[in-house]
Image 1: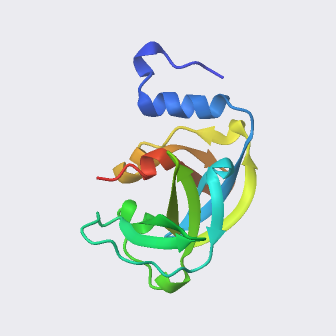
Image 2: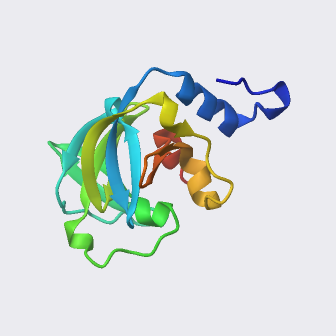
Image 3: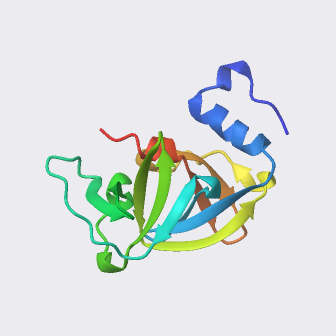
Length: 162
């Protein structure tokens, strides 16, 4: 693999290089508006079916509200809104992927949860220049398969709201 020159070592380029240099990691795939995405499975604490979500007054639009997970309040983030996408027609069937960040639990509301798969580093590519700016801001890189691209999301950046 070629190294990135010093002039190319910007934040996203470094993140993509670091991801590509890792051994094969295991990811949970999820779907948002027909796009397959992935997050590292080690960040996932739980996967939930449709949940009752209580709105939080004056919260940013991406914050769908809060939900109760075994007595603990979890902030629910609507990934469609976070990524600048229209609301789903079947929002009542949305699933929640619970992740932990900074000692807090967050629920990422997605359309579907897929499978747990290894993504060999050989298939990891930098974000394409045509990727929407909102997606580029929260994506480490993409994984290329024969028939699709999987956007590899950066959970910390996803949760950096406001």
